[in-house]
Amino acid sequence: MLKRKDSTLMRMLSILLQVTESRDKLTSAELAQKLDLPKPTVYRLVNQLHECGLLKHDPLGKGHIPGDNLQRLSIQVLNHDVLNAP
Image (cartoon, rainbow, N blue to C red; front, side, top):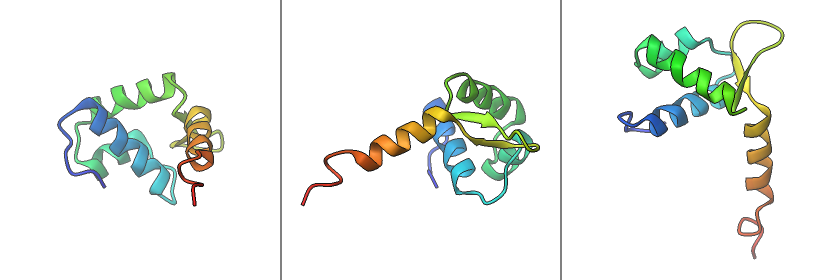
């Protein structure tokens, strides 16, 4: 997990990592508790992550799941030439 949480970017990355590493679908309140961040901050950052397609609501229940743009980014990283170099 990321050590520094003082910048917006680091907080957003911490949220993304927590969502992608968790077996459960986490709510914003659960993310705030796990990351030791204020609830209003997490709600604001999660909304921004939803707006840019990095997160989306779980259609089968409560919580957040990786969004389409995060999945697309993950695939692009895995297919990047540098990772496939001999």
